[in-house]
Length: 113
Length: 119
Image (cartoon, rainbow over all chains, first blue to last red; front, side, top):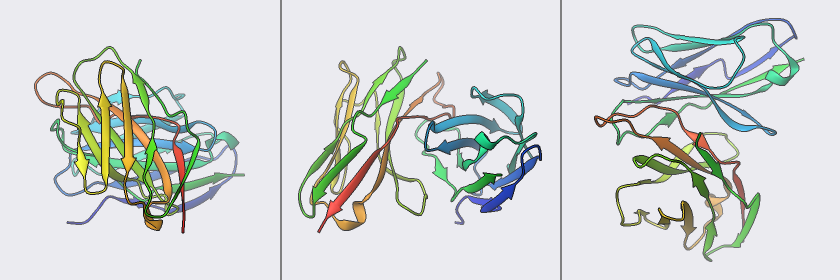
């Protein structure tokens, strides 16, 4: 079974631009969560989508948004990029069963200049 | 809100020796999971071990075991017979469970502990 895939793997953007990151979960997984990892703040939860609905959201500004499609693939968008948005963005997928673990993708490294 | 604290930013161990990584957490929930994840330099997060709060028996996975003290809200990871491949950042994480046997996907992570293994 293929793992979680994230595209692109690396991205360089300029302040003020917007960016869209993509995550394809493991087949059969309907829950997709996004995390931001930075040296200063560590791993922080962005949001979770389940069956195309956002069911949990972290403490991030409205510039961060996401969506999930009917095939469970998810995208996250960051508008008006700031230098502080430079980070590794990790996506994880799981079933909704309580014993299910989360499987992480390799991440997208975003650099904002 | 739940918080997870790892008080050891860095730890080191000699190959074949044993090392214990510490983690404490704070929650008012009674039904939850605790996890240890490993993140090697490749940045791929890998689940090492997990513990359900309702289970009193400590989880074990080969050379990895936990010491789960629910009352003290402590969840330490013991790595026995350390290997060079164990070198990585280790994260302790918490996930709340919902009623009805489902769970949200949200993980709350600690700050991480960098583990160095010396040959």
